[in-house]
Length: 278
Image (cartoon, rainbow, N blue to C red; front, top):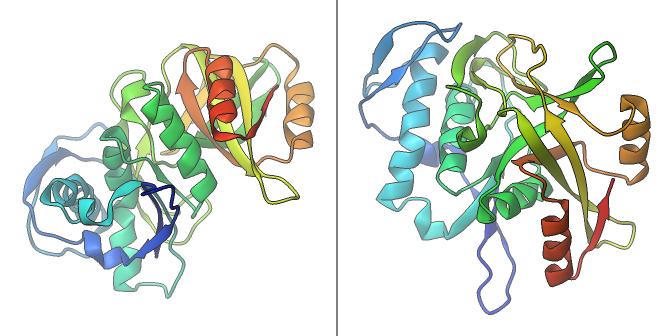
């Protein structure tokens, strides 16, 4: 199932649940496709195909196709969060093989999509997108103690507007943190100042914003089909992570480009939410 944030009407807030199969349409298209991101352009046909390398681009292309056709607009979507876990080999599992591509395309078109059902990070991504500073779905992956950086990333969705170069599509025999196989987006946020925005929840049920400013570097990344960006903060990685976890964050966050902590602080003030800058 897919959870979504709806645009407030007369200060009303709501949650909509949409069936996964709603994204299955038939719009032939062409898309660059190869497990290593280096292959030729391949034609995507209209027939439902069991092979994830052929199905994923088809589903990905149909996501924005349905958006413009009004299938998502009729639900008044501002953002969405998704997650699949079910019977192996099911139609739904095959369909979700294309979600990372499709949701990356939707994110680039102003409908941020957060993986693993994380609605709070969908909100963080939406804040970043509305402020025109990106907002890519990410989490702490690993620490490079030699380089002094923290590698942030995920298997998607990715905000292509903040990419360093052209994102690649890579076949995944096993998804990051979830069941199934398919095609993922491999990319890096461009070098320069970045700010992460985390939306978490306090013990009294209120939302809380956490910002961290750092610098995206040209350091090494792993070619494993995930979005990965080495980030250098202004302190030792262990010290940074100790401060980060002390604020009780969700483990995902949105990555924006630029020095934006003061901007996010103002958003918190307007929304009446606590904001912390690490």
